[in-house]
Image 1 (spheres, rainbow, N blue to C red):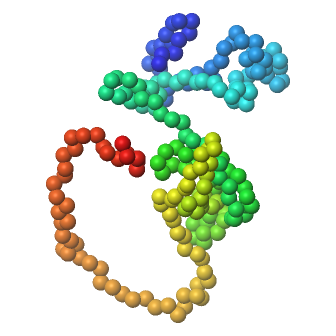
Image 2 (cartoon, rainbow, N blue to C red; image 1 turned 90 degrees about the horizontal axis):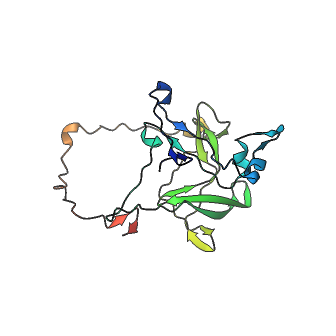
Length: 218
């Protein structure tokens, strides 16, 4: 995984403190390809190259990063035969939602693995009232809607069903007068002396690979 230039390894030898967060190359491309050069022409000067045009004009490009930190370095897993393991990219799934201000609106969500489904638009609510609010201090970001259990999403002609692993309920704000007839009851709190060790037993010895990972039977 070394970056090379003309067959020579690109090696960072400086101990400059400015390198403490690592270095990144930005988008990499073949400077000798005329098609690439045309795609990277600056809007304001056709004789100049603008690297940021990569983000809008290229469907695929690469970047390279290195440094002294964990996130700057290449990390991989190997199996028992010393072969690198490969990982599938997130699956893009299509979901249609009605309600919460939407009518048959299509969303493309990303499923990154067990328990990870991203892409639902969000909004901010006031800490105290729970009402929709401009994002800022004393607000909280929440999803605009929840996907009902059993809802269908599709990817490449394959259908999947969604089921929530965690759910949240928020109190509704009401007028204080609604609570005027309520009374409070005082209870004695338990004392720490009442606590008993549950004694769940001796920790088992694990001598084999796990049978289930992320809900998937191995």
